[in-house]
Length: 405
Image (tube, rainbow, N blue to C red; front, side, top):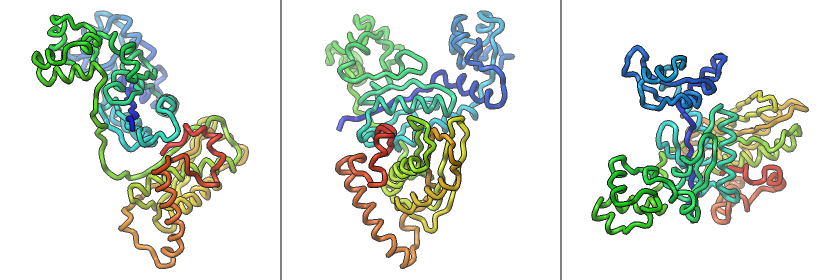
């Protein structure tokens, strides 16, 4: 199966995160809209520019130059201190949102992530997932991202570096000549600055020139790195997304609905679809949940959530859905227009840690067998091909693209 990879890159991360944080704390101006920079101690002539707004860029201010030099170009430039505690907070918020789409996430840097979506797409397309992620990051977190869509990490990374900001770009193999080979050789991922002049001396000035070069000559000149450069220029990359293989502390999923819904019966059907996805992942980890949480967001962006404890720890779809449905009924007010609904399970324990009474064991045995059969069929034939009767007509509303594994 061909890999399905996304690369998420936060646009102007340090300045964007600072702006969002300041707005939340009551600052009246969005510093992304004025000449501003993120920098170190301005009292020291050695303090440098870590990030700049688009307005600052218009004055010729560049990242890594001194704040003193920036002030010469724009005397009224607004300087804000870097705060890595804030940056880590917003990086974690992004990561936690992305965890709703796949468990296979590599944090490439504080503001970049690779996502392996290969086993998490089912009937949807990678570009649809990218569009949904882009929209949710903008609406829920307050900043924008560039997203690269491809079949390997290299091409996804290259695609996300195309036109910015707030853009989604594909870079599939058949698009390499048109989109990548025309770029200067210096734009190739992982190509060191010292290597560029050497390639220029060999009349290799674009990525396409490198891709069409003799691989053996490159090997003699640069060794293994020459082979890797040639492979990258031709879009060849077999590296895996290096994700942390640890069991989650909680598993959740939410969906921004394609239209506002005020009918609780419709919401219950969507809740069942979300619960089934959450419990499917729960069982794949051999975990049981003790707590269920349901979240609603109105069309006015007002958030409410209710949490409840399960009678016994379980991974059963029926038990968890019944608790989620109960919570939904407690919190839902008739006539309220809902734009987002989510379900989450927490207080997870290993399956072999749970002691179940004989009564509970016999009561749940039939349901456990059903869940196991459904899971096996989903693994064999695809997640969305096997569904429960209670949510047979939800696919039309969610258009399948909104269903996460």
